[in-house]
Length: 378
Length: 196
Image (cartoon, chains in turn cyan, purple):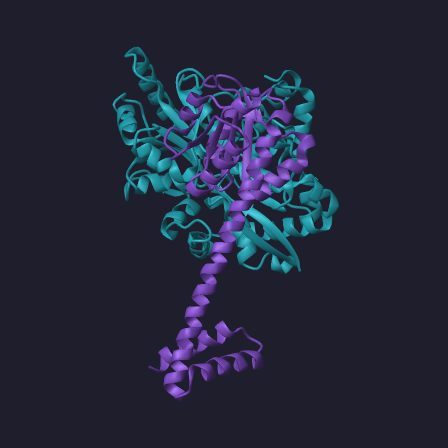
């Protein structure tokens, strides 16, 4: 039995890793996963770097940024499996959401909500009021890029018209309540936590902005991937089998209970269940916002890391002024994602259905032009 | 006074005792501008206001991700801030992470000027961890002694034996069963509670 120390942040999409450890999938591959609950993405990165963790539940963009050495010491990471796609949402303060409703825009669509927010921001600017503040959980995160895309679609310049800050997930609801922020973009189940506390309204699901967007991945140090490829294959197989189990609605009740335990998320199972099922209350006990792809844990080849997704994340890093474009860096970013390891471990899998108009299924606004980005960085 | 001793150092640590141990260590080393940030409210704004050269933060503090915003381009930052350690300092990173602390320093500050600060921090964090472990050890010893005393009391009452005999009975049983005296004591207490 090989023992592996694996880090996670308490979020619904740690499901695959937790299920692999606790429902026998790792054991079946001769692996014992010791789960380590961490309090920050920075800790996840640093502990994988120095070898206190063998691997972790990791933000896709963090894996890319660390491998490129952006903003920090370079940590060469390998991503042999995607733990999920999608799964986040944008939650806004009740008063802000009400003001958006008064613009007359249709808030039932994501683009309508973006335009309504654009009008509110413009009106505040005209009145000389303080710019609105929105939070994400980490600078290198899909949540950050998602809210930038959403703001831009509403005619808002994310760098000038609003303030974007970072707040750890457990403090999101509290910060919304005391007015420090006006909204946030965060993974499950923290949107639902804010709704249940009646401090915010879920305005848009992530899948309504990008239909097929990279989110958390299995990240391991290149050192480990190179030294023990066979162990890594077993880990990938275990996670792949766990992901299939997590995706099956018949297992959602058990999975929600498992995740709700104090040593994992320490949140009510019923609330976690809503995020697994993609049926989110937008107000306490009230209207539902439903999306079949709200959180994708396995289906349609979701676990196979798509190098186009790695390139897309790098394009978002460049667009958010977090790193300069360079052809070398683009190649480096692509090479972090390793479908070859996934294939070697799992064997042939059915091809992922194509997504339109780009690899992340952008629903509105600027489309990702892979070839143009590779050629010019734009 | 050397310029290095004027470096502005900010400590982010929710543990007042450890923060005090660290500040004291840094002051002893001659650093005069050491400030502890308490609470999470507007942390970044308060840090900007102090304009520190070095930030030391407890690894178990979720505010690390908040501070890492400063590693990236932002119009709010007065000057760019970067991690102190680079590729060549693998050992220092390792030691700091294992000791449970992370450090951030202003970009451009020479490594050798900051190294003594980081070394002091690592050694003080280790000292605190030792202190805590010793305290917990002492606490658990006290707890164990209480359990053994209760078990002895039960034996004295039930079997009408002396305290010395009760203790030697506990010890013999522990030896025969290859268990610790406190485990035997615990089972006697549990049994007595069940049979009460």
